[in-house]
Image (cartoon, rainbow, N blue to C red; front, side, top):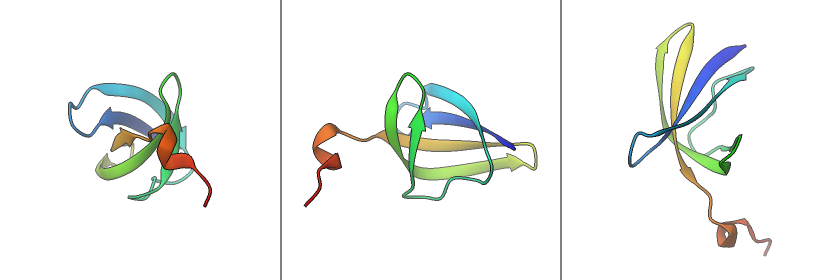
Amino acid sequence: MIPIHYRDSETEEELGRGFEETLPRVGQSVFVEDVGECRVVYRWQCGPGASVAYVRRVLPEENYSA
């Protein structure tokens, strides 16, 4: 498992931490506890032991089905 730090892509505020099987891809939706659904904007691999994923919150109107 890879430790991931989730940060707001605009403010760099730490939104949460978690462990993932693989690194989240740019554009992938992730669920951050106490924040909700977020989309990965970019990521930074700090080394084999940790990574930072910069995310933006997904607004409710972005989650509609066409």
